[in-house]
Length: 558
Image (cartoon, rainbow, N blue to C red):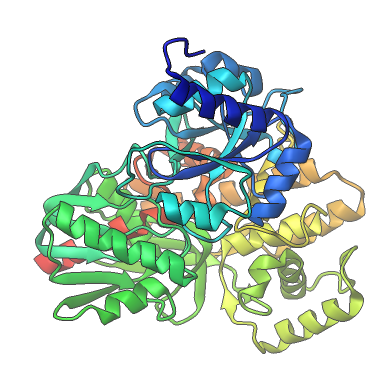
C-alpha cells in the first residue's frame, strides 16, 4: 500500500496490521488524541475491547478506507457523502445495510452505524493495509477524557491495547471526533468537536464585556466571547470526575490565551451541584450570570440563527434545574435572549430514586403508571418487592422529586413495551425506542393538552393496553412518537397564535431523535410557522454554553 515508505515506517504498520488481523487491539495516535482500534468484523476482538474499556453497549464508531467501503456498511446518500468527505471528516450516523460485515457487538440494537473516513496520513496507510473496516473508538476508559499525550496514553491504555502505533507529531489539544446525522435533509450535530472547533459563531447581541460561559454537566462544552464573536469549545465529556474537570479547566485556559479573552463576566447553569457551576462560582473578580438550563437551549438556537427572539420554544431533554427548584425537561417556553416565560410543560410525575431513575427506566414506568392510575403489577423481569418499594416512594414523594422530563417519559415507554428495563449509557432507552419504530405505522396515541400541560397519562394507559393485547414494540414506539410530536406541534402552534409569534424553536437532547424532530417540525410548518432547529451546534447540552453566552451578552446590553 505504501511502496515508497521506508522500512522505519513499513515495519510498525505491518506489525500493527498483523496484530489487528489476529484479533488484537491497537491504540492509534491520531490528530486530536488516541483511538482504540480492532477489526470491526471480529466478534471476539470487539467483545474484548468492550470488556477492557468498560463500555457495555454504547455503539462504537467505525473507520473505512473510502466512500465505497462506507457504502458497503451503511446507506450513503448525497448528504452523507458530502459530510463524510468534507474537511471536518466527522463520524456520520447512517442506516446500516442488511448483512453489513460488522460484529453484532459493534452497535447492539442500533439500526444505524457511525462511520468516518481517514483524516490523517497514518489513518490512510493503516486502512489501506488492513483492507477492512476498523472499530475506531476514543482512547480512554469509559467516563475518562480521551488520551492525547504519548506517556499518558501508554500508562492509561496499557490494560486495553495490545500495541501502540505512534507518530512523532505532538498533539496540542485533546479533541474527540465530531458526530452528525441527517435530519430534515440537513446536518444535525450530535457532538461538535474535531474539525468544527474552534470556528467562530456570531452573537446577535454583542458582548460589551468579555464573557466565559461554563455550560452544563453532560456533554460539556464552554464558550468564550467578546464583541460579536464567540468560540464554543470542543466536546469535553461529562463533568463527573476529576480527570474530566481537569480537561475542562485546561481547555478554558487555552481558549482564553488563544482568543485573548480575559473574562469579566462568567455565565453558568442554575444547578449548584454541577462541577461547571462550582468552577464558575470559584472564579474571582468577575460578575456572574446564572442562566436557567432550558432558557440556554432556547437562546443557543436563536443566537445560532442570528436572532434575538421572541419565539416559542419546545425544549425537551432529560433534566435541568427549573426556576422553581424542580427537575424540568419537557418545557414549552416563550422568550428571547434576555428572559423567558414557562408557558407549558409535560405533566409532572415522580422521579423515584432521583438520578437512579435515569439508569433504571422501569422506575419511570412505575411512576407513570401510578400517575395514570394504571396497572399496579410489576413489569416482567422486575422483582415484585423492588417494584412495590419504588411505587411506595413515588406515591409518598420520598426521594422522588417531581419531574417534567421528556427523556424520562421515553424511558417509561421503552420499559413498558419490553425494550429496556435498565440502561448502560445516557439516552439508551430513548435511542432504542426510536430505532424500534415501525415505519409503516400511521396511528397515534391520545395525548391531550390542558391549560398548557401535555398530559401523557392517557398515553401511558394506551401503551399498557396495546402491550396487554400483544401489539409489537415497533407499533407502540411509532404511535408514541406520533402522539408526542403531534401534541407538541399543536400546542406550540396554539401558543404562537395567541402571542402573535411566527417562530418556533425545537431543541434539547430529545430532539436528537429524528422521528420526533421531523414530525413535530412538519406539523408546525403546515401551520404556517417558521421552525428553527440547531444546525451548527448540538441540540443536546453541547450547545448550552453558547446559549449562556448569548443570554449574558443580551443582559449586559440591557
